[in-house]
Length: 639
Image (cartoon, rainbow, N blue to C red; front, side, top):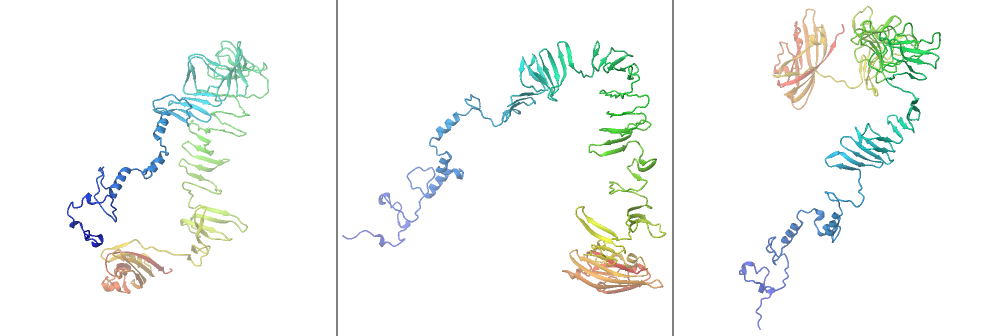
């Protein structure tokens, strides 16, 4: 039977295309159940909501996975990462539910175990109110400053403006408080201790005692009254007589003694307070005794405590007081020692300010004169130092000191000398400054530095830098030679290093022609009959390009009064633009009027009886706008 099928090897590659197949000509019945598609076949990508059995393209699959991942972080965008985050717990929901059930609700509840607090339990609306747990204590603080402090040693501290206890309160420990208020009884089984110095009240069987922190008994009160101790008080009032071994107070009277001191019955000392306001200290019962007596007065009030001594009085001990006032002199033969405070000496009119001697908070000793006058210090009856009310100081003699420091001016008469003297074996030499000349017969005033030394003389030296890093700058040696940067000059002026010069102030030229402001004859040589020197000029053209030129000059005046002058161009340097080359010329010379030729002229001469021919003009080759500076180096004829 003849073969009616077309074998695939009989069809050329790419011979059958989509345009040769009729629409819907190939149906599912024509396609095998299992088709292996090789190469890269494509088909239509279905929408993400399509849930049919259509073929899913790689684009469809990628889009579906991306929608599933959405914006999950990179560490939670796989199922394995999510499982790891859940601790690979297949019963995670049950685990979380049980954990939440074990927590205390925000609305409150009952704790079946201990509550461990790191440090604070705070009030929700007030951060200043809190319960705080620390290693050695627990404290309760409210916003008003009240605090309850319980230490591990068993002590309870209550701090606040008032601690109020309602009902009876018993304590076997220590109560520390500014004030204790109780509407009932406060029972102390042992002691009431004062925290400032730890003195305390101690209750006995039938008594109460006040004792020091070391146990010394100051005061004991029993059923019969005071048995031991001393009463110290600003005032003691008694309708009878208070009697002790060293204290006796009689009934009050305007003439009789109100305080009587007895020394074991041997002698009696009375204090009387009569109507005159004078406190009379009497020695009524000790006539004829020769032993020394010591009197100490202390005034704690705001009034004045006066001490009147008839006749001379000698203090053999220390007189301690906030202030000591005397209308006469105070003599201290063994010294006057002020532990603190100020010694004030007033004038005859009772000026309240006076002369003050004191030591300030920085331990600096000071003497101040608050009178409207001067402060004078001297030896014997001679004044050595006077300080006026403008803080100027005048010394009558010589100031000898390792260092004199002043924040103001140090002034002396111009005829006087400020010198540093020393006296070696060869004689006394002087170094310093003076306001007058040392030339014989000269009275000229000025500032004169000097170093008169017949020994090894290094002249007058100049130093700069800081205290830690000093640097030698220059010297004028004993021959008058000036050295800069070197200590041994070889000539009258010796400079070690570079020498810099800066010209006169800028001369701006708007039209290209200007008077430089320099006159060789009158300005540089004060109209002397002859002179010479060098002129150097630096200039610009349109303030951009720059040039430099040098000139020499010489002039003299004849017997008839005519000045002859010669200005000669020497050399030049310039950059970029030749127009920037600066030029000088005899500005007021009738022969040179700054024409184009004269701007190039290298040898200019003129003569006139008028010194104006010494004026120097300035411009540049381009005769354009520019700025110029001139440096003049005159050489004067020795007169």
